[in-house]
Image (cartoon, rainbow, N blue to C red; front, side, top):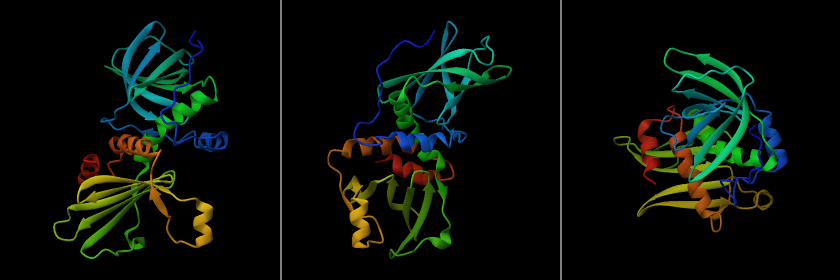
Length: 255
């Protein structure tokens, strides 16, 4: 019913180019559900039978989604469905089956298990999932393990999946946010206050770094990957967990 051939939709061409090994690793974390924040730029619609309706995304995993319907529909577990996910002007249509349902008085929540048509479709979905997963996974680090090296500034760190590390510097006086550095995989963004711009970097070849014995990653200015790294950052920010303070999330959104 839903399995017409479709061209693959990728959200990134120069970064997050997951190979089959990386995809297999994410499949092992199949049960991890990432909460989708209400302010997400992701838009979703569900086709169930002959009905289409916009839905609210509740959470996403590597193999499925939980959504909230506005209109009650007649369906049962195992029914075929199609979830349309739109982000940044690109739309991904994923076939699947109803995995479970929870009917309520004025709405219905249901789970969708995806049936990826091919590897490229799965890779496109995992690219879309990554900003959600990174943002939702951020948690405060142990303050006792954070080195305080900047005079007049207090360093805070937040750790997440995929080697994610958000480092934030606050002024001691008043605690206002001064600046940040955000590592996402081997991509880095930093805030510059004079002028107020987003600086974008990539990590040098790891083998070279190890040979040189550097204790921290060696960075270089991003070139051909620059705009996609910027886009990844912009898509992560609305999905950042509320375990990160509001003023930090608001500060990141300014860039």
